Length: 219
Image (cartoon, rainbow, N blue to C red; front, top):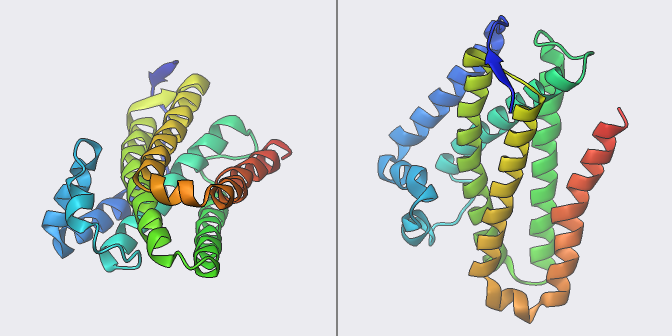
């Protein structure tokens, strides 16, 4: 992994985005401090789901605030990624960031809607709601870790190609681990509907990312 001292001037709007993420996290903590503390320690303890698992409504203010952090953090990393790998993208291209964040928001929103639609068709809304809640929670936590990496790349070091790839691989692995944990939690339900689960896995957890990869690589 090649990491050099950062000597690139970071635009003010990127700093404001980082600040906005911390404001959103502070708002979530003020809204429900005990829940936020349990959420932060989810990486080492499962207490969050044991305590908050019965309240798996996704569009609660607490979850929405952290989802906004996820959108900003992930979009910022993708922007830095594209700025590094594509010469046509510079750190001054705010329009590119807006496009990335807009696409990411639409992507997760559309994916969520389709998953809810499938749950309604097969009358498994309760199980799917809990699964989506687990998945959203883990991805919000990963996004906060990614925010710290964004800050490192923006203010401390000038990350090379290997560093970006390593972070991308780590994030994908963390997502995979969180999915496997969620699948293990609902192992009995999955085994009773194995055929539909395989269809779901291929259609909504693999194909969308493959399509995105193909679109990016053809640019």
